[in-house]
Image (cartoon, rainbow, N blue to C red; front, side):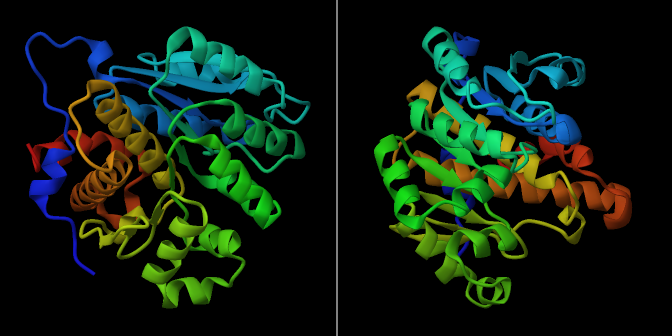
Amino acid sequence: MKALPKTELREALVRRELADHKGVFGHALVVAGSRSMAGAAVLATRAALRSGAGLVTVAAPAGVQRLVAEQAPEALTIGLPENVHGCLRPEGASRLRAAHREAGYSALAIGPGLSRNSDTAKFVLLALSALPLPAVVDADALNILAAQEVAGVRQLLKGRKQPCIFTPHPGEMARCLRVDVKRVQQAREGCADQLARDWNGVVLLKGHGTVIASAARAVANPTGSPGLAKGGTGDVLTGLIAGLWAQLLASGRGRGDLAFQAAALGAWLHGRAGELAEAEKTGYAMTAQDVIEHLPEAFKGLI
């Protein structure tokens, strides 16, 4: 399996022109966080801001809205209804639909730090059904889909009529395919290809030798480091991909399979930023936040 050449990765970078304004570069909506995992919302939002997206809005439980706003002041925030556990409630989906009618978001990222609370599970299913947005589906949103009946998930995703990028780690992939993790690790490309076909989207299987697969092709990401095996780095990748995808969609400057391009570019930049963070901080001491801080230098490697 080959890596995507840098020439194709560069084509996924939306060029900047002197007369451009923030609307050209899209509006990413990040739906993330819960009382016990507010940091996931912060990390995904900060990564989306570093991606180059013109605007980023984060929708989180009302109880953590202020914390997220303080940690990512460049982002807009929406506080959604929460239950007694600090997890999202189902009625938040209609709030997001109304917000989308007003703001016109370009791409959605959903999943980091949401929890698998039963109220949140209903929220995720409603949000994916109700929001007519291209979506990066990660973390607990994947786990919630994996827990549903197979036929129901396929019907939901087919009915969306908007593309999805699914970003599982091996454990999440195993749950999505209903196999064990050993099977996933033994046949990474095959498993990514299967989920891409079953769920009709682009799949990014995280881990050493990240695989990006669609129904048409599969490539391996050549960048990355052992230091990325830390909590929070997946949240960074989710926000980054959503921001890159928002730019391709809103600018009208992309060509071809924009979902595949955003996933491949996001994987490359994320992996390269991880390499740079490890070189400076060591694989022991680097954190997900260090990955975000090294994204500017990673971008320089392609510009």
